[in-house]
Image (tube, rainbow, N blue to C red; front, side, top):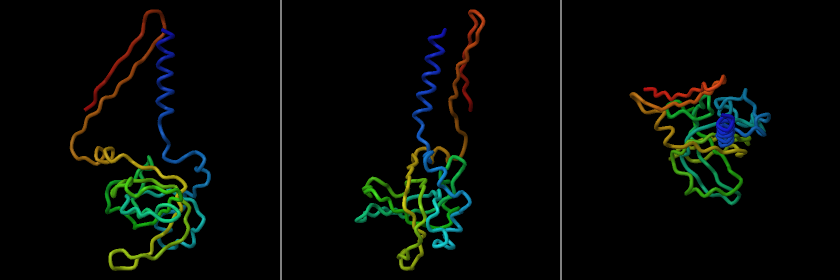
Length: 183
């Protein structure tokens, strides 16, 4: 019995260790959670030096001499720090510069990301035929979201999943377990 309990505890510890945090603990204290993307869009220079968390969908990736520039359509973040899938909720676009080279071919258009970045100001660039003022960020941390996860979360209609669990009880030969399936 003790071997089985140890095995279950060990597997739980391994599973917990495999989870990658969206925002590294080391960056948490630096983030100014009071600053919104709308405020940055309105006055990017006022927020220069602030570290923020923003998310969205990659529109373009461009190699630069000093790294890679990402043009991102901002999307609000949910409680898991994951960008929502509805593009109509966007408050605009921003440019994020990753100092280390990141091959643009490895970042497909439509990739959803969460970025911890330092506001560096703004840059006026062409968006089609119009000038557009992009807030700019230096990337401190970049999290790519799985495209399949977004499709599953936004798919209409019924869904199903399998949930499982095992329970152990003391008291002699009594032990129990169970699996449930939810629809």
